[in-house]
Length: 183
Image 1 (cartoon, rainbow, N blue to C red):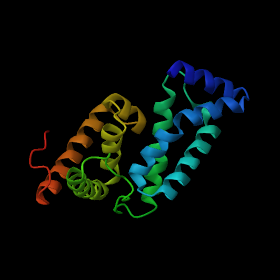
Image 2: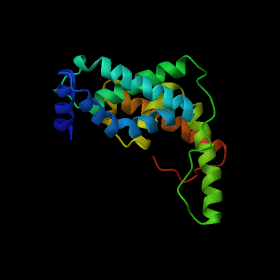
Image 3: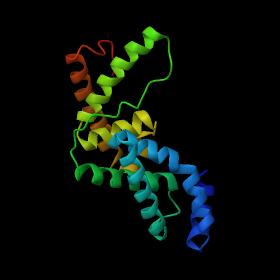
Image 4: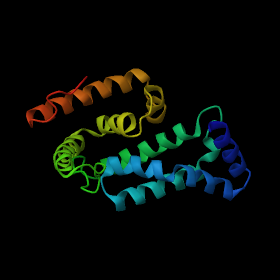
């Protein structure tokens, strides 16, 4: 997919606007979802996502086609999202619209209660820790991919992730959640 993405980028740089539309179609939903996990508001996530794609379009000539487009785009997305969050309060509650998949009524109630606590505790993490949690656990990026997105060494991603997990573990255990959590 990355060679295909690079072809669209090159076409766009040459003036083919439809090529950028294809990239937007391909990545709008995952970028929006990543931003939503960080900002916790559909309206804010929509605004930030629009800003990300506008910035991506105007900076395509800076994209190094030897790299993966999605990594470049996600790095841009994380930077824009972090800038947005820093301009606002860092510790807002996560949106209640982030629901777990359907389950039995009892499982759903328990999962909803646990998910609400986890969302709240993830929201209490500092922006750098929240970003690695979102990239690694919600977007399921590898350490290498997360490092590319955040433009930090892979060791930094691992260190931040370890610290974020430890902070979450402590917070959740203090609230009686996750007694059997794995490392």
